[in-house]
Length: 422
Image (tube, rainbow, N blue to C red; front, top):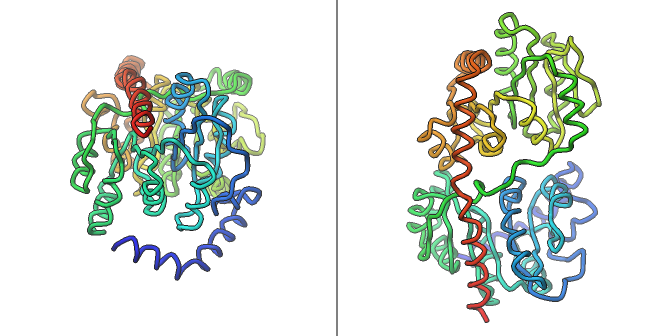
């Protein structure tokens, strides 16, 4: 495929794209009040001065780039940062987390018209792509305007690599437009070079530089008081199919662990009704956070179906299973739990975080459980053996400290790209 064919397909399907966006608005997956941003129309005035544009796909990427944004703003007083993302959850979170001098817009859909409108208005001095977001028109139109482009914390999963190498010369033409690429790992670097990247550094994972997840003290203290005498474990970022395994683990352990409390934080809180119904049907005593229900001594499972509160729960517990990994979803980020001294388990499918898992495995810093039976046995062992879980959590915490020197280097590289562009 080439860019001409790509845009031809977009033109043919443009009515369906618009209909799809409208459908997403009704589903709550797009912001009805800001939907015009998806067509490249701004919702605020461009600030005078130097503008750095950073694009991050969703919550995880946006959170990982926050320390870099703060460093970039600290280096130049008349500099501003425009952060684009594509999801409502990331936009809401960034409204709370972005520092002064940074602001959020939704990324435009990848049509020439929307992209041109976006770029002509914002006129950034540099464009930074986080991880592996590759949008043909967004990249090509940025290059046409001679805006230097960087790809930071680049990763390339096996599935993404297989997809992009089937596009023929398109991937090579796009990736060669980046003047600088920082890859998370040698694996990512090799794959990017195969696809045409020329200037690639391997310097570690920017997610290692992220601060601990924030939390609100009052809700944390309230939960701490309510669970003071309970033995607890947490299943975070769970996907459909995993809650049943977690519930089975609770059934197996509750006769052996007095006062056992299992906490479930689903990856998608809008699944709360579905999860709650199944747990109630199975006869569990469940308290639901989104409904304001309190944990009582009789509560067996606490369903925390809210957004942006993992920082509370990773501080509350010592033992964590990170979801999206016992089903075919590619896993979730282990570093957030590692940074808050948790003993971590994950399933076999961590294909979206291959580099991080490799680092964790090499340092014996997390345990892979391959099925529900191993989840039960490992969870019980970690909850029973203080020394074992403490050592595991300690090794995980050491892994996340390895990337601290990376932040200053990348900020300097951004400054050099801007200076080089004149």
